Image 1 (cartoon, one colour):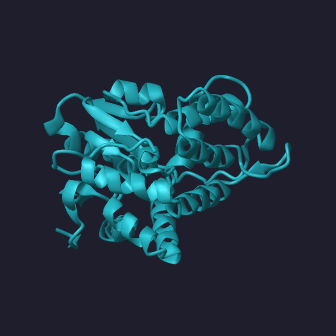
Image 2 (cartoon, rainbow, N blue to C red):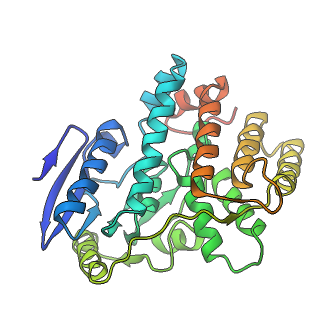
Image 3 (cartoon, helix red, strand yellow):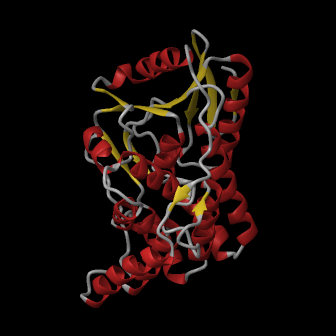
Length: 318
């Protein structure tokens, strides 16, 4: 044991590899986990070849601590929500741009914030049985911990069609319809995984395989560079998405609140109010994502969705 708090532990896997293990109820992401993520990155930078993020629970992580988020939303503690979301964004981004390799080993339910942590890592080593998805719309929100930004960038890198709009549309549909994979292969097909991410069929081997990935990557690892030149469609692309949202609402396929969430998501994914030739940075996308998340926390219908999820265990379509 290297370090521990009530939310997570940092352990030594041997051979110069550390492992961050979540240990909250359902492995829901909270301040303690975020704190230990920072601690893990700091320790690895000084003393280890790399970091594995994994655990031996029933599921990797069901997402953020929704009870806490509902409580602070109802108390209108906007500065506290902004702090939590910004800190979660920052630590997930630090995973990606760590000077040492970080491999996440998700399995089972890897939802919402759990999916964002997994996508934050430089690489994934996943179990074949993987229910991965950005499901925040069910709680009346959009992914706020970097998930919206990260899925868009993955789609832009891995999508073959020319121009930014096809990738924007694909990302919009994945998040707006809360697509969850039924397997690791499907997670790759949806876009949650990169081509270089690997699959292990034996659950008991997952952490060992992730450790081997770290040792292989550490031989010639080069720290990735943050993106500052992302080309997005801007207001013209947003109008196309808003037109589709309006059609869905008029035909009764989505509610008024679904439409509001969709419009905020479209604003983020198209880069906000930018000029056609203007390129944006990852930080710009994170700022837009965080602002949309915060504004939705203040909506009564979003708070009703959060409460319904917590009490009934299924989404409310209000």
